Image (cartoon, rainbow over all chains, first blue to last red; front, side):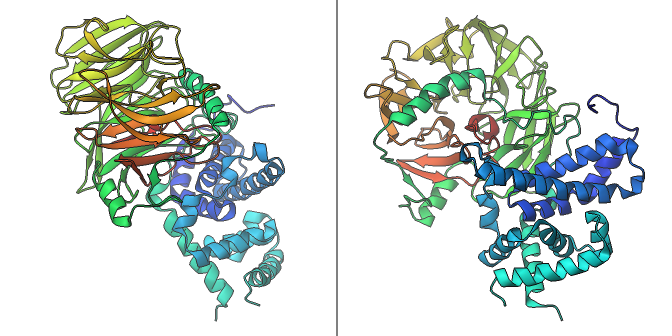
Length: 172
Length: 413
């Protein structure tokens, strides 16, 4: 079954647009950190909001739209990274976006690039916890809801992620 | 107390935040959807593909790679920062760049950039109910631009198309956008070229009225009067080709004319005297460079542009020097009076080459040129002065992964 052609929920466009205007900036930054290039980040965020728009009428709790879209961005980033990994094994099919944007890199200093590079080497869950905590400044309970994991898992994952990051950066 | 690693994470977060600013967030596109383009890059126009195929073959067989151009700031850097800066200061201080989603979404917008730094100065949103900006062209007054907006969904280059005049106020960084008094171009007609006169008072457009007939019209933006010239064939190398037409300050309009059903190269470059009454496009124009009678493998790789002083025609040209399309690429200047070559710039056998002239100063001694993106790479826009190319800071010109970016449609000075 496809949802293409179904009329969106009344008022969905205004609600989703308002949500986008309030939160797109932070989510694009988050996706840039996870993916390393701006164009892919914008696409993932657009995808997430478009998905929200399509499903707006069937959302059980519309007040949790932000949480939904945040989860979608994380999922979208995971999918994009996996696509890149697969494409990297088939070089002829590697999309351009798989290469970190040179423009983006130039704008970020060497020390920060090192941190971002190390961050991208972490396992998905560890990376996402750190990004949500340090780049979106989300409190841990909110991270738990966005990632749909327990608060205890957030705390332990964050702790492990910080240790792993320190190792990668040679701080330990 | 916060640990060092957390400090570093916070600092990196601030650095990323600095690169993604609030004014750079694209508008939300809800009209198309993630799979509207199936993740495929937008297609170049059909004539663009026709040109690209032999060029790709040429690139593959060129054996000697000897770029003769000095690329400031690049691996062949020879110029100093000061000379690069001087080059960048010798062209208009602002340009407009159309930004489109890299792969999937039906959104686009335009931004005004500082030529020297590439900094974003203003954002221009597509006016509703239109959905996309398809092309942009500039005028000699360096802060007036014409944007083509379409109702059609990206990436299909289809009408209806409406023209808007954008004026950039450098002191307030505001852009005013108003619809031009030119009728919307609707099917079956397709807009090819747009050019605003140096004075900003006249607008020339070329429209394919059918598969074999082209109409060039000049609109007075002050009185609304219009004159039109028509002929079989094509003007411009595809829909929304923003340098298909170019003006001189003498009121002549340069264009490449393609014969019907001949898509490999134009037959000739003509100069239309726009002071004449409308009528037969070719009869009212003067043929300057006749490409059709030249040997195979020789021809312009992009649109020919007249210098504002009206004395020269500038075009990116490929000249075959051997079998299998081996040869050299160059920017060539022709006398507008005699059609003879008067200067050759940027002669190169490299596998990537300048394929468009976006802007020229009055005499043609300083050019803004475009090199399409290598597959997966970035398009290059640069100032060509003498034989030295200085890259201009650009944004998202690599918006079509895997395909050369049609620079000319997306940038205007």
